[in-house]
Every structure is written in C-alpha cells, then in structure tokens.
Length: 386
Length: 180
Image (tube, rainbow over the protein chains, first blue to last red):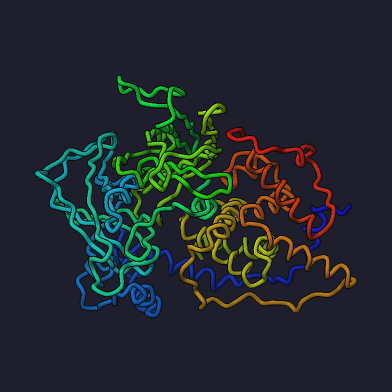
C-alpha cells in the first residue's frame, strides 16, 4: 500500500519549476495599485502622478474590457461619466478615518427579486463616532466600472429632501439606488465582472468610495440558482470568520418565529467577526441565504424571493461585529415549497470598506449547517461556522 | 526600494519554488501553477499596503493561491507583459516507473473537483490538521472529512490502495450534516 503523502511529495518535488521573476511582479503590483485605486487620494500630487503614469503606459488594457462590453473608452468623455475614467474625477478617496466616509454594497436581498436588469445598491455614508460631522449634502451618484476603471453604467441617487445631515459612525446615512445594467450602451448589454462605486458631493468637494465587485450576466444580475456551491463560495475572505445558525419553523400569529412549529419559514442568524488582528470598517450588505441539495447544487437563494427586503449595515472590526438575521420562505428556486430531502445552508455577505483604496469588497461566506426537510424525520435546525 | 518590494523579493527568492510546487499539485500544469502563484503574489501585495514580513506574506499568498484556484473563473484579465518563469526541461532523473507514478498522481488529482483537490493537497501535502484545512477553505470540519474521504477513494481508483495516514476515522466518516 503506497503512502499518499509520499506520492504527493514526490510529484511536487519533481515538478519542473524555477524561481519566478521578481521585476515583472513588482511592476504588476504597482500598475494594479494605481489603476484600481482610481482616484486621487488625500496624499496629494505624487499619487496623481503615479496614476497618470499607469494610464499612459497601459493603453491596451484601458480599452480591452470596455470594448468587450460595447462601451468604448472615450478620451473626450467627462470624468466619471459613460466612457470616461473614474480615475480622472476630481475627487477624494474615502478613507477609514476621514471626516466623511463612503461605501457601497449591492443590496443582495433585492437584486433579483425586484428587477434583475437593475442593480440595487445601498450607498452608506458615515463618519467618526467620536467626532460626528454635519455634512452639506450636494448629491450622489453610483457608477459601474470595468476592470480598467472605465465607467460603463451610471445612476443618480435620489437624496430625497436631504440638504444637511449629521453623520456618525453609529448612525450612518443609507441611500438606495438602482443602476440600469445597460445605461451607457445601446449595443451589447453588460456582461462580466465590474465594480460599483459611489460618488458623493458634500460642501467640500467630491468623495469616492466603494469599489465593490459585482457580476453581471448578459445585462442581468444573475441568480446563483442551479450553480455548484463550490463556484459560488470561492473567493471568500478567510480573514473574516462567519458563524451562524439555521432553523426551520413558522411565523405565528404574534409575528414571532417558532422553531419547529412549521416548515414554511427559514430563520438564519449570522455573526461575522475578525480573525486575529484583522481590522476594517465600512458597510456590509444584508444576509443572503443559499440552500444546496445533496449534490451541492444551489436550490434556494433568498435573493430571488419577491418578499426579500433591502438591508445594509455598518461595521467596525474587530470592535463591532456584524450580526444579522434573515427570515426567508422555505421555497426553492422554482418558486415551489422545498421538496423532502437533506439540505445544507450557506450564509453570504459582501463588505465594502470605507477605504476606497482597499481594492474590491470582501465576500464572507460559509456553511452554517444543514437540516432534513420532510415528513416524519424533520430535523429543523443546524449550526456551523467557517 | 520600498519595504513591500523587499518583502516581495525575499518571498519570491526564498519561497517561490515551494509555492509553485504547491500550486502544481492543485493545477496539474506547470504554466497554470506559475500563473496562479504570480496572480496570488500580485493580489496579496496589491491588497496589502504593508506586509509585515516574509512569513506573513507567504501565509497571505498561500491563501490567495487557494482562493484564486477555487475562483479561477473570475480571473478575466491576464497580464501577459510579465516575463514567464524560466522552465527547466522535464526531468527524468528516476526510473521510468517513478515518472509514470508522478504522471499518474497528477492525472488522478485532476479528476478531483477543485475543492476536493484543495482538501487533499492541504491535508496530505501541506500536512495541515483537518481543523486548519477547514479554516483555510471556509468549511466545517465535517465537510472537510467528507471531501477527504471522497478524494482518497477517487485517487485509489487510479492509483490503487493508499495509506492516508494520521486520521484513523477518515474512512469511517458518514455524511453527518450540520456538525463540525
């Protein structure tokens, strides 16, 4: 009988490899930092110079993804508008400790249920808990950019009657908006991986925050129904720990959830904490629940429910964790009650740091347990962590 | 040279080959392994303005290798301006049977689903405890045991009986749900 460890070690030891080239890697890191940051930071002219350098010397990459989406990069386009580069906007990047902080998260619980050709987002605006500020609100917009920072979709954020708003870290401002997923192009619909940003105008100027990744499939916000869970939960950030609990029950006449009293409602509780000395602050979307069957295929996605509500919240790790709960109908992707069987529950959440220079959002997700659904042998609870 | 550049340089010099070998077991392909490691190093140093030291950098890069491997379909743009790794010719410095064994192992690993393959590599090549494998992959311990059991059985179909050491109850695991 052969030892698997020995076989793997021997195979790896004889793999034809050599020392990677460092110079090329350093160059890639520098270019990616400049392109993904996308705006002038408060650091000043030096940062602007570095971004301009990257823009000039990587022209092929600037146009590649934009052309694939049918959006041509337009040097004459206004900064931050269709075809223009977000990097050219005269704006300050939101920071974790700035006086006004901006983050944006897709409102996962409503992106599909309401209108899948519109990306619903929550723009979250916060400030310091210790030193809250009064902001003169001048307007806001949300933009979608491709991998090269070219704007491919935009939408205004309706502020309602806001003119001035007092901000504090524990009472951020939540603004909702929807981006049509073809608003910059009358050709091919958007298709691919993008980033969503918020541009906020206050009395002092413009602030940009977000950079949260979103996926668009042929002009629609895709559901994950029918996909293998391995494809969905890859890319999770393991520096954030999520634990949760799933229960099956019903909501009684007193509107209280009763575990085990029925099988029409799923209740999911989650808590996100930081591992080690990880720290970050920003916004997070609402809890999203997925169920998989025995083959690992997603058969239920809470985001598809017409009853799903929008939610978002702020966090400040490691001090303030992210607790959340969700009530969802025990209905599958096909709109029918879940059939008998064994299911695994998965909780997903997406973060958006106040720090606009922190590239992309962070996907937090894990298996939170399973349950058996059906007559007789129902075991309607489970918990787990990841 | 910035601090992060010094850390990157040291990481690549000291740990580059080991990282690529680890990635090779995941991908089964030399070029793919090199790309995976390069992407992971770039992702790590782009994301982190300050990386403490080489050891911390390697931990971040190993996690990035895993997540990038498991999330391979999201990598839309490849930066081909980077000089590719220098490759040695295929080595045949052992008996023919040893070479075919290694080929068989590589091919057998390729038959495993990405997550199963990752569990097998982390457990039996990196020698991580099951709890650590679970943490790296965002899984419950029970799920990891199930994947390892499935993976070992699948490898045995191609490679014959295998000794999968340490965890004595590995082949007695049943699909107990909700437990970690």
